[in-house]
Structure formats: C-alpha cells, structure tokens
Amino acid sequence: MGAKLQKVSLLFPKYDTSFLFLQFFLSSHAENGQGENINACVRKSGMNIEFKIAYMVGTLVNTGAVIVGGSIGLLVRKALPVKYETIYFQAVGLFTLLLGVKMSLDISSPLLVVLSLVLGGFAGVSLRLNERIDRLGEYVRTKMKLGNDRFTEGLTTGFLLFCMGSMTIVGCIEEGFGKTSDLLLTKSIMDFFSSIMLASALGVGILFSSVLVLLFQGGITLFVSVAGRDIPPEIISEVTVTGGIILIGLAFILLKIKQIEIINMLPALFFICLFVWLKLLLQGG
Image 1 (cartoon, helix red, strand yellow):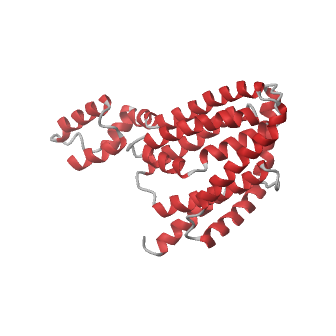
Image 2 (cartoon, rainbow, N blue to C red):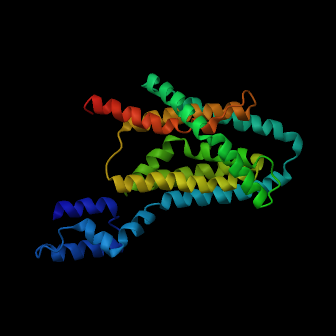
Image 3 (spheres, rainbow, N blue to C red):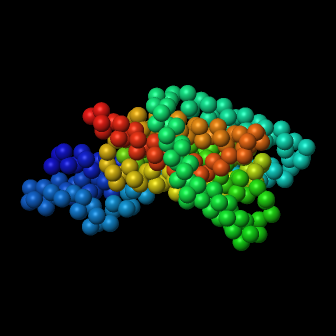
C-alpha cells in the first residue's frame, strides 16, 4: 500500500489538502482491501481531471503572461514611429536566429533530424498546414474586424518563439509529473517581455498566439501526466534541435532573407520523437 501511495504522490502534490485527504482515506481502508484500486478510486471521485488541471498552473501563468505582455506591446505599437519598424524587425529576426542556432548546436543524430525535417515537410505540404493556418488567421482577422494585415504572421511567430524551446518541453514534462512548475514560471517572465517586443512589432496576432501556447503546453503536460513515465532525455534533446532549426527558418522570414513555409515543417517534431524512440528501442535503451 505504501508503494501505491508513493505512486499517487507523483500525480498529486503533497502540500495539497485534497491529496492529504485522499492519502488518509486510502490508508484507513487499506486493511479492509478497499484501498487497493487507487486509480479507480481517484477516477470515481472525479479528482483525476481536477488535479491534472491544477498541474497546468505553469502553462496557465505562461498564457496569462503572453496576454498581458502582448496587450502592453499593442499600446507601445501605437507610439512606435513607422521609421523604426524596419530596424525593429531586424532586431527580432537576429535574436530569433541566435536562439535557433543556440538550440540546434547540441545535435547528436543529424541523419534523424534531416530525415524528420524532410518527412515532416512532406506531411505538412500534404496536409496543407501552411495554407490552413493562413486561412484560419484570415478568418479570425475578418470575423473580429482586426485591421492588422500581419495577424497570421504574428500568430505563427508568437507560437514558434514561445513553444519551440527546451524550457517548454522540459517544463511541461516536470509539471506533468507534478515535480515543479518553476521552469515554466521562469519561462513566463521571459515570454512576458518577449511578447511586449513582438506585439509592438507584429500586432494583435501575438495576443492570439497565447491560445496556441495553452493548447500546446497544456497538451504536453496532460499527455505526460496520463502516460505516467519519464521521457528519455535523448528525445528532448533532438526535439530541441529540430525546434531550433525551425526557428532559424522563422528568422529567415523575419529578416526577409527567404520566404519559407515554416508551418509545414512542424510535423518534423513528431517524426523526430518517433525516430529517436525507435533508435532507443533498437539499442535496448
């Protein structure tokens, strides 16, 4: 029974009063055999979903930080003279390029990364992801009568910059296991200032990218909490590298070096996870 309680503690934080009540309840019924099926007890009580949502505190704070920072950025945008717009975008583009290069330096499986980018690109083109995102952005912009003609660019740029880093992946995994939200909370501070800068340049699309941040980070957190096992560091490392290369492509767009259909390459993140997992499986890792 002690081992089962220890397993439950990974799902529920010990400082939470509801967990303490659950621990007491299970312990008091263990001798009668009523505390054997912990998961069934949790699901029956309806607390499973409640605690998974509670574990998304880092993601929720991060989403709020992007909304608040983006709102401030929109106010700054109105006061920013047009003559400074070009240099502003160049600064954002150079920063994105530096971030992408830094993330992609730790590559250990170049062949798998290239293969993932190619197959991911093929999948993205087949699914017409770039086209669909453009249409979605245009639909939202028209429906909400937003005058910003760079809405879709702001939406995708914000999402990629806020979600492609290793802090996102590792932070969501830690939060999914109920270990800590510190990494995502730290990331929230960084994204707050970044969203001010990005929204002042790209407009309201950055504000709407907070929805994608919530869905992406929340999805990882919930998946990890349900899967209930550690994700190999090799997968995290190669996903970070792949994300870094995607950011380099985004930097080319911002710097107007080359127009790349960067959204079509997002399936590469799935393929690199699959290939590294298969590699570890074959190696017996």
